[in-house]
Image (cartoon, rainbow, N blue to C red):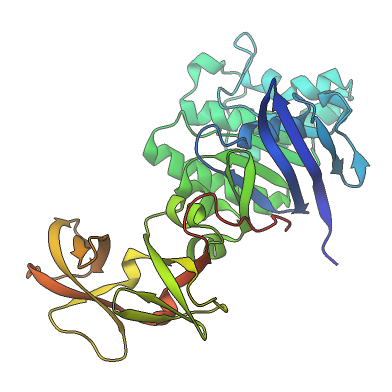
Length: 361
């Protein structure tokens, strides 16, 4: 039986009359790296701050290892939070910043020293213990902030967009290191970001949010290839989102093309189909045994390893098609977009407000 470290049960939050978190149900497994992902204002940071104790829910309860914590102050919860701005003490050196929480708990000096040295080693900060924050790079400051949190042995580590202040190359390096350390320690971690590449590359589970509602919880592969709502399909990566009509008998229709589905569909009902650009191909002729959609190339971009084609079909719908290893000869004019029907993922509903799957993992 799976062990859950953190359980959010029917969580609601209001700011004045604004209902910002709606009936959130979520179970977070022990030792997992869980990412709250969504556009700005979707409620992901508000949810994280309720777990940390900086906001109190207006309904529901939060359990940490079976202990209800939503009424406790932050210092009693045994969680640790790393902020976007790091919030390091500028007048303290690296050692004292990392040791601060342990000294507040009045741990013996030798225990503090051992814990701090271990944390500095994990975060590759050995030899920097006498430096002050203004003598560190952005990546080093981020490591100090994480070390200060980890040294407290929290039951859950909470990270609020901690890499957003780093440049792109350093951000990629640090997120790999952070993930490796989390796995090495088996530390239950909740990470907030709006960066899809971070979420897809780091997470055991991704929680996709919009307007305070969880649209889907799943692995990176499930979120990317099997979105539960049109919003998730459209928000994660790039996709071609088609409005189709149910034919019954597990088939839907787009223009003249009939597509087999993985779910039962009702004849005459509208659905959405998501097809990723990398799953598509182009040909000057229709390809037997494939779903074929005729269109005209309107634009193309050579990106080295691939060419991204923009194609408008006979219904006026714009498609994005990524062709990898394209060679030197590029296509123009009228083409057929073709793909195997198993690459088309059918979704109930046709807009972002469509049916939301209960987000309990």
